[in-house]
Image (cartoon, rainbow, N blue to C red; front, side, top):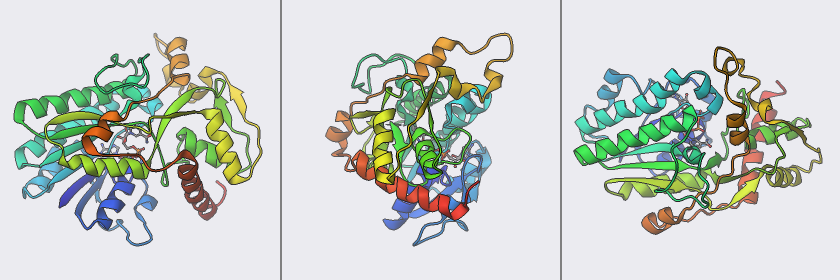
Amino acid sequence: MKILITGAAGFIGSQLAHKLYQEGHELILIDNFSYGKWDNLEFEDHSFKDEIIKMDIRDKEGIATLLKAGDVDYIYNIAGIAPLPDCQTDPVEAISVNTVGLVNLLENARKYGVKKVIQASTNAMYENETEFPTKEDHFKVPTLIYPNTKYCAERFAESFAKTYGMNITCLRFANVYGPHIDCLRKQPPFVAYMIRELYYNRTPIFHSTGEQRRDYIYVDDLIDLAIKVQQGEGFDCVNVSSNTNYSVNEMYQIAEKIMHKDIPAKYADNTHYWEKYPALYEGKYAIKEEILEHEVNKYSLCDNTYAKEKYGWEPQISMEEGLRRVIDAECEMLTKIGEK
Ligand SMILES: NC(=O)c1ccc[n+]([C@@H]2O[C@H](COP(=O)([O-])OP(=O)(O)OC[C@H]3O[C@@H](n4cnc5c(N)ncnc54)[C@H](O)[C@@H]3O)[C@@H](O)[C@H]2O)c1
């Protein structure tokens, strides 16, 4: 099969590329390197460094050129602006990439006959949900910019599927963890941050009480499902979740045990996470305290019955095993680069 992967220099995109390469597929990889890293393209058995094309998913002509031959079977749109505060501070860019970028891919996929488009969506769109575990077809419309960019992207995907009979699956990822998770960015995802602080023997600062619970999915399990959904026809949205959740404190205890550390965490109030983004407090209307509080203390748990029943998928990696693997990979990487 010939497969286009966008966001291939990022955490999930690079791991997906590696798996599909191992399965023998012909790949076209693109990334604009706004967040992606060259190191993510280097695997023990293969380097994608000379193959990746520096291209933006919004590039109409560029994407058309890649698809024009008409022999691309699948598109995985993994590119996106994922950090929530980045989307909140530059909503125009976030909507442009996360929503309009997908529409550019869909329009070209329509013209040039791609068999299926698979979109990286998010369970962040369940931010206002109060029923758990949350099913795909029942939730309240989100509030913040990031989940709305993905929510709108799904609506356009549905529009293309219904209007043109295209096959599109939107995978609503839970919090994804695994090797290549970015522990060096300004606001790393929680798992990456916790490992980094433990590695450097620093006291981590968690927001709120640390009792907030989220659901997670190990990257290999996600990729397994992402490959299985190639076969589905029509349009659907699929939760990619382990169907269980963990508190920040529980995750930290597991990580401490694996890393043989004992460093009590400190706790900061709800606003601490957002203080690095003063733009949100400037101007006539500042971001509301209740919105920050809700986001920091958000509870998430997604029902994965649909993925199991329709695609015969079952997550395989336990939290202990997944954390062990990501800890090994992150510590090896941090050792290589030396203390920053
Ligand atoms: N990691 C998670 O927990 C998680 C959860 C839910 C959804 N997602 C979604 O999954 C996708 C991948 O997430 P990730 O964690 O790998 O993030 P990441 O930042 O590591 O990877 C995203 C990649 O997209 C690239 N990119 C951004 N804008 C682009 C553009 N306009 N054109 C081309 N490339 C562009 C970036 O350079 C980066 O390499 C994102 O769309 C994200 O919203 C991630």
